[in-house]
Image 1: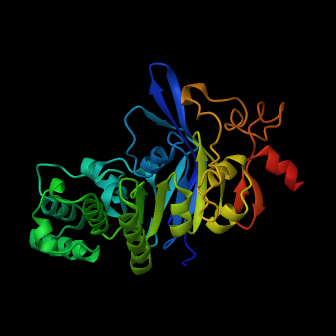
Image 2: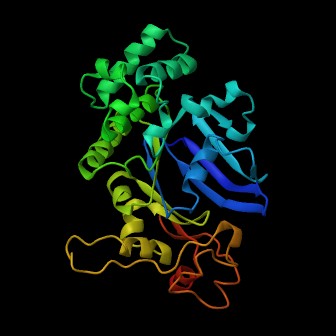
Image 3: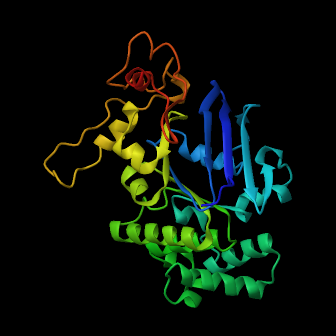
Length: 333
């Protein structure tokens, strides 16, 4: 793995202006990613995963307010850029389909229904790569073939609704990869797929990491998927990263009660009669963020008078393994 960082996110805080006032969606998030590395971003719906990913491409809506301390630096071909310094549409193309590509959760929402898949693939290649339509078509068909779509030249002229769910997802991966991005953001890319197609897509993505050496941020609520695909994992809850580290270390030795809860909620294949353990309660509304640790309203290990008063700082609990939790802090001291 290369020593240089591909992506460095520091103190990312994002609020949305609403009629009810400012709502915090992402709170002081920091992480980095090296070329050829896969990071899983895990958490329940509403934890801020997709908003964080869209921030990397400055794709959040116009009512988004980033704190002055927020920094997102991206390094490609030895050149580092601060994403917040990119202003014009031309500059932003670097992180919007150029060196950074995104696979969205539902491919039907990403392909225009009245335009063939091929036309859409060619259009973005001509835009980002400054090549001819003929070259763009050749690259597009080659990439459709590369992701395992049979009769790629025929599929090139079809519409999204003519393809199955798995094939649409593959076509979207092909489209995202055709610009040869340095960073791929995959937002729940396997949620709508059946298990066998899901496994094929995950295998495909790990093959592509090896082949192109790109970094991947894999957004999911499924820790089993992360265990299969990622090198490291960041666990998010209500806009904060509560625990992060090497994926095997975090899953085998979780320190935060929320991470433990996510792991305990997974079905146990070696004990199928064991009841599933749900995390009690619901994720609070961002309008009603708890005082102190964001997880204290649902935490079975909450320390009264501490967890519901102060916000825990990030604590190192092993090599590249950190947690923000007073309980873990007391256990490690």
